[in-house]
Length: 205
Image (cartoon, rainbow, N blue to C red; front, side, top):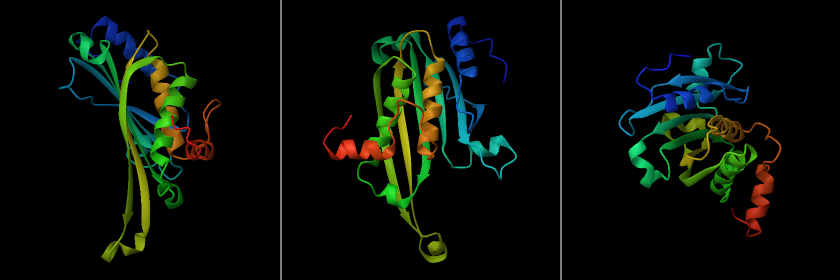
């Protein structure tokens, strides 16, 4: 891990240390990555990706496309009215999907539910949550015709963490990455099949 910049306030530096020591899913390769500097006075980011057996360099897994994402923590004392607090978490996660799952009309709802379930399973408190889930279907033509049809899902979200436990928000993000990548869920989070059945019955989250 890189040293904490001396420009960080004590409050933000303590939050960053919690993220660095969060209990993240062991199937992921995690590294610190440059954070956006124009959104808030203080920012910190992690990038993650599903470990691949054919990749000896964990940093390559972060860029592999197999369950990858970023988590950004921001702090701006002047944004309390807009955010509902001085901290803000930005989450990004994406993964390829089997075509059968990609064409499911409820898959975007399932992805959003997985994020909420992951936060709830970790008892992560938050407010002012918002986000989008984007499903992309693709077909190859010409020289790319051999790749056939494909699908992938992207989820972007942000929320204001409550309380002083920041690690649980990173842990929920790591759980989301693994779920999107098709890995087994942790206790307290529905399977994709259970979510689809519930939503077809009219029980959307």
